[in-house]
Length: 484
Image (cartoon, rainbow, N blue to C red; front, side, top):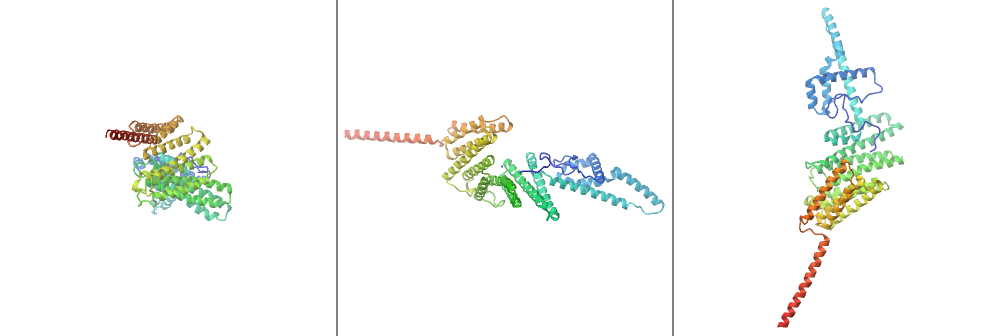
């Protein structure tokens, strides 16, 4: 809740250098080779690897690798190279030659002439540092935005965010550098479009990272994380609008960019709903109320719906998001209480739940049309419909709604597959069914909860009892009057 050009595999964590990857493990990255490597570059690589292997044998260096953060290690690498320069085989030979010349100089009373050698070593170290910096820059420029998922799955959220933000900075800098040379070149428009599109994807990836984190958070930061996800998605949307302006003359390209932009807008709407679900929250950390957030989400999602008309699968996702909006509004008004600026009557809340059911059923029809009833998205919609019925039953104390939820859950179970996701979902469905069964067995846990049918029956019984009582009183009066 983008299209990419050919880049490294997103499943592989990016390597900062030959010395350490993003996981903190010391490795040699053989993936960054150049087709135009010079003899000097080859020597540098050989020296670099030799320095790395020597440093790895040093226990002190190994300890530092294990305790330092990946982003800090690159600078330390240069320090270790400097410390180990005297151990290079080539420099050892050079040092031996220097000593020999120094001895000859001493015999003739001449000063030691090793300044030239020191300058040479310093120059080679500087060249090595520049090569290392160039590698890091190239890796950032080729970083696949989809790498956010790898970091999210490993719970390395901060490292993932830092990496994506640095990639954004490098992409922006690259646009500036190329702009100086290509401004009047026809190729500049192509480059600028590609670069701007990539920048939007990188910003979208950071928003996805925060959205994923907010869904799993157990520290009470869900609302704030959803807000940050919205802000990053909003930045991405601004960049997508730049791309739209660049490709407006190409109808096909403009349509493709519009679809990509709608992905970011959909994420914005979802993040706003998740933010507002918990009420207004701490206003010192954000500038939105729940009411404002829901209003923005509605505007955004309705625009996405317009963009995606005619694309059944994409439209189904949008319709589902509109249902989620109604569900969140009803839930916030029902549960957030005074913390929520969205104050609604019971009738308005029930209308929102009904609206959520309408959208979810429409989304289900679209998913079934595209993929069939046994597809994960179709089953997910059946579960969402059950969830709304269950919420209505608990909020309005309606047994009939809980029974509808039970029917939907059983239908979803009958469609389940045998994969891991299906197994986990089936487990959750069975828990919900067990909860509903307990409520029914214990007279709904809350005795005052009765179904609409029970209310009608009770009313009829009361009317019949009242009529019988009237007849009884009339008979008593008649008897008493006759006796009198």
